Amino acid sequence: MQNTQVILKSRPVGMAETHNFEWQSAEIPALQVGQFLVKNEYISIDPAIRGWMNAGTTYIPGIELGAVVRAFAVGEVIESKNSDFPAGVFVEGLLGAQAYAISNGQTGIHIVDAQAAPLSAYLGILGMPGMTAYFGLLDKGQPQAGETVLISGAGGIIGSLVGQIAKIKGCRVVGIAGGDKKRDFLLKIGFDAVIDYKNEDLHSRLQEICPEGVHIFFDNVGGQILDTALLHLARGARVVICGAISQYNDMTNIYGIKNYMKILTARGSLSGIIVFDYLTRYPEGKQALSQWLQNGQIQNQEHLIQGIEQFSQALKMLFTGENLGKLLIKI
Ligand SMILES: NC(=O)c1ccc[n+]([C@@H]2O[C@H](COP(=O)([O-])OP(=O)(O)OC[C@H]3O[C@@H](n4cnc5c(N)ncnc54)[C@H](OP(=O)(O)O)[C@@H]3O)[C@@H](O)[C@H]2O)c1
Image (cartoon, rainbow, N blue to C red; front, side, top):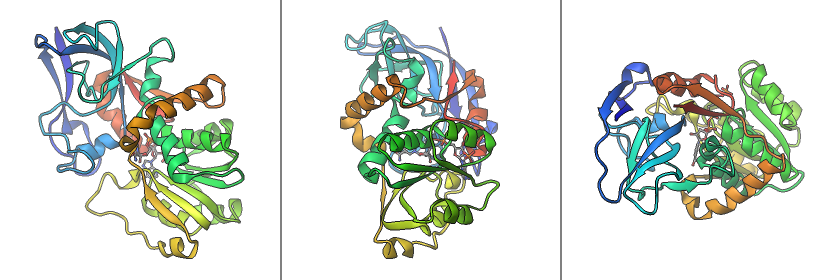
């Protein structure tokens, strides 16, 4: 049987482009004892993939040149020599950007219940992005009813979930996102206000919408948006640094934050979150998010792209803002 794999051919300078990847067709080797073969159904397109394409180690090592591009995926075990992962079960984890994956189950592969939720949900709301939103907001942000929560990158999966969780906790929620489509979507799912940073002046809109300041700033974007948001912190504000997508394409020239003194005068705090630190608490996050999803208190927005050959184009969409919600490739 043949596999189709997306291989890292060269390291991008700036935006990752099609020429940085190679689509390889390879014979699937026979399974060794302890291994199982997964037929991937969905591949998760995450901003982190762009960071992993750089040389060196951040919180995990970069992808080696010539290796399958690291990506979360979900699929069915179709052949197995591992009794913990028998044929017929569905699994999620870092299975790679490929049609089939061989695993020994030792690298963060989890069995998922395909009856309880659509498979794709395990890459979004019930997967790593959902856990990031849940623990990032609740553990780092510590939201209190009546507080104002500002979220950048609000139209993505993490931003849209953070906003909806903050509403459940009784907060007022303001999103920052580009364009009318994202604004309409965010207002529809309960955001109180949305600032279109591509067409509106962020600073003056924050003065109008948040005259008392912002109690939590959940930042997915970094750079100038973070710098401007800092000026609007309320006393005791918490800034949660979840991501910095505006910087990922040029990590050698990171935007220098000028307004950090506002953290001092606001008696604020700033903390980073890495979702993998919460692995042991994932069951708590999954339980809460599944419950809210079932109750209709949270909507799970997905953006599906068909075909592994679209991998490079799909990754680019995260940086041009073409995606709405969780970006996935259906194989
Ligand atoms: N800390 C952790 O453990 C952890 C885990 C997972 C993800 N993350 C981070 O969380 C963030 C959100 O992830 P996600 O999966 O939900 O992705 P996402 O929000 O769907 O990311 C793509 C969105 O980012 C916005 N964007 C891209 N470039 C931008 C720029 N230069 N300026 C402003 N906005 C820009 C675009 O929306 P617009 O149309 O609004 O521009 C785009 O649709 C990312 O930074 C990611 O790296 C962190």
